[in-house]
Amino acid sequence: MSMKTRIISLLLVMSSCALSAVSGAQDIKANAPDRYTVQRGDTLWGISGRYLTSPWNWPRLWGMNRTQVRNPHRIYPGDVLVLDRSTGQLRVDDGAATLSPRIRTEDIAEAVPTIPPSAIEAFISRPMVIGENELDDAPRIMATEESRVVVGAGNIAYVKGLTQDKGANWHIYRRGDKLVDPDTGVTLGYLGLYLGDAIVRKFGDVSRIEVTKSVQEIYTGDRLVAISNSAPVFSYVPRAPGSAVKGRVMSLNDNLFETGRYSVVSLSRGAKDGLEPGHVLALQRSPTASRYSLRTSAVLGRTGPTGNDGRRPYYEEQLNVRNRPVFDNPKAIDDADIAGIPAERYGLVMVFRTFERASFALVMQASLPVAIDDVFTTP
Image (cartoon, rainbow, N blue to C red):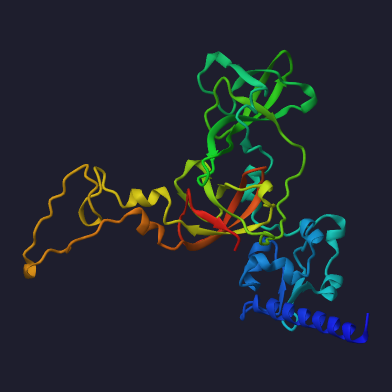
């Protein structure tokens, strides 16, 4: 390599570093403090919101590479975070960490989670997306005490197919609705409806169980899934996907039509599309969603100022105020008009669990109610 080539390469590296520092500094809020002491009850997302205009840029300001993002650097209550505005970097103050009690080396202090564990702990260890026949071979409730139609917490039921090697603690499930990609019409899977928990009181060809928790009615025919012993993970590094991703919200928790912050939604993209836990996606209100037509249609047909579809005649009442009607030659809204309305960005979700072709995310910010068919994209 010639001297001229080496000089050019050095200049390119220096320019890249300078641009990175400027870009990082632009991500820091003007009113952000230079130092912040992590408090018990903080979340990584909350701290990101204090410092950054775009919370998903946390890994870049922290200086993480891809390996570190997969195994994120943990921060603890008492750590002091320092913002270096000259480089646009964020770090833990080494001096403060040395002077602070070293309780984390004794595994007493818990690392700061990304989001409140209570918001997603019910969704972490349970299979929420299942195949059409995935539960067919799972242990089945074949009878209930006193032949009750419905059982709940505290009741006894009898199950065929339980084995001792998987332990005594089980979840109770039922196959729910299809998860259909609104863009393609393809069925991506089925919701696994969590009904409750049970403990085996006596194993046998037909085992006796006691329902210890119920969130919905439990019937004969419902299935049991062994509870995983692995500890759930709540510490993800919020970050944008490495490539462009676009899809739609397929369903909302508890079969709601609209929901809000800290609610769980299912997305029409998954691990196969490059999504990983921690990925942050922008929510957009889709003007072409089916519910738009519901809001612009009359119960018995589209009438009045929005037009008439012919199912019911509309007779305009002529008002003689200043010798002209209120609506002068109104034009009906058609699909082409709706398609021309731009999508409106209004919130953020963070993926916390992925499946092959679908995923679950938590609503982190939303200025409008989150609804089925809303679009999500790379922020």
